[in-house]
Image (cartoon, rainbow, N blue to C red; front, side, top):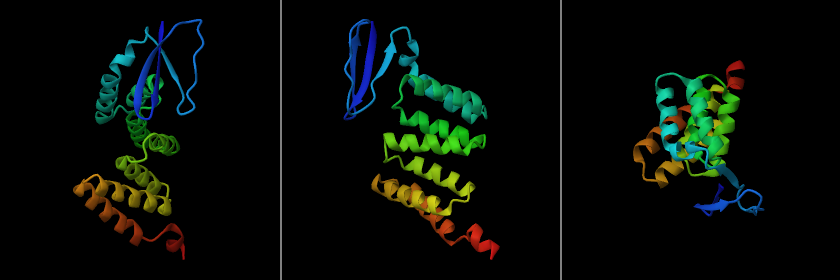
Amino acid sequence: MSLCYFNYLEILIVLPFMQGHSIFYSPFREVNFLSQQSNDFHNLEEILIRGMEKGIKGDYQGAITDFTQVIRLNVYDAEAYYNRGIAYTKINNYSQAIADFNYALRLDNELAEVYLERAEVCLVLNNQPGAIRDLQTAAKLFKKQGNSFLYQETQKLLRQVQHSPTIKNEKK
């Protein structure tokens, strides 16, 4: 027997799924199938933490491997996409970092930290308008969430970015 996991209106629903039986598809979210032979599902939090620890130690490829494992087991884990995006940033794989940040935001568009990280990548890529948009959104979300410290820090960074010359202005 396998288990069918899906997220409907932020509620995780777990249903038994017998091989040979048909299964329905949710029009709201993609349905994920995990067999019971995968003990990793029960350790998703541990794998996520292990990936973060590897990232802290500078083992970014190892961290990416762990975050990818979490994502394979739960494609709706925005935190895994966010952390994998950070690890990709550390190895200068900015296109993959942006893709992961984008996906995390599709899963939860109120993750202020993701907007902040994506803004930093935009700055590295000389995308000042994208950085400004993300910093504005991050600041608004930090304020809404009552995180005054990160709100103020984001506002400070936003002012710096808005007042720094763009590449085009520097060439004139």
